[in-house]
Image (cartoon, rainbow, N blue to C red; front, side, top):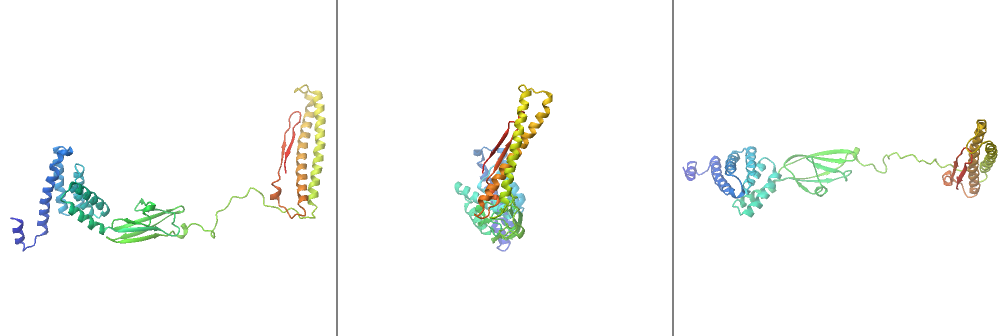
Length: 349
């Protein structure tokens, strides 16, 4: 019975099952044409025969609406030889499985390949591609308050800055958006229907907002310098007291310096070079003690005299803080040896 006879039998209307059978028969002819020239591509006759069988199985599954199984068959065929016709059916299966973005990419490649090969399926591929483009949802994600520097992920894939604020093609259904900030992360969920476009502005919650000038500030490291202390104003006796203490310390340092020299002379008289008798041990200890006391009192005296002088000079010119005085430093270097010759005081104001 011919197709025309079947049409008359069903009252002029062709049932879907008949149309599917017709499509399968036509596709079988296409499959034969697709794989007859396989030798020029280097496949063995056995590989081509298996590919033709898989292609036929894929068409049957496609006609029955089993898109997942049909896709598996066509992808296996593509591993032998990926023609525009095979790629078209892969895209068709993905489209019916809801993987619209993948399908669109395959349609575009199939369209280009069919155009290059001047395949007769070009018009059908172009039509399917145009229809699918109108169905794909678009999502626009922008950064709002507190999320200006957020890293954005869409369904687990990070979006580059070039995609932020621009339309991004997505599949229909729910999607998860994650914004990552230095203090943590937050997320948004959105669901899109076919052909729908939505805009999402990411605004950071209060606990992830960056701190402003009016908010709590980070604790700062304590200053190494002591807080400024006001030196007594004009008319105070403190500068004279400090300077007098410095003079007394210098006098004490001079006294111990003379005692140290005396001990040095006595030690030199009983020692031969670096060799000294045991009986001179007490003399050695006294000399070292005098040298240390001389250095300490001389250092303290210099500091006291210097600070007192600065305080006296500052009178009448306003008060001066220790922060200013601290800039005028005195460094005392004390060193003693067996002969206690090391009395080194180095300083500057």
